[in-house]
Image (cartoon, rainbow, N blue to C red; front, side, top):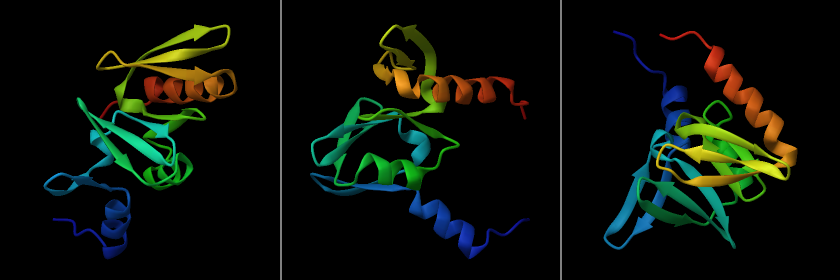
Length: 127
């Protein structure tokens, strides 16, 4: 049985998002997050049908969560690549359609990096 090093446990924990709830705090694993939107001085973390506010910038969250799972698609949005079902290309950028039907705007500037990331996922070998 493999034992996780303390470094990998710390790295895994640092990716979790802790949010305030009416009854205390909730720890959210990155795999639970469908997308994150900028909301004034907060970030709105979308988990299922719930939306949680955290006082952290999108840049900080994107860096902390990692580029292998999340990608910035607009200055105001980050999406979890596992939740992307469709990319609709439009003249002004595009839309990412998520598994729950949510449409997230994609800027022209970030459209190609999203296409590349989706191609990498599509072409990666299955386990």
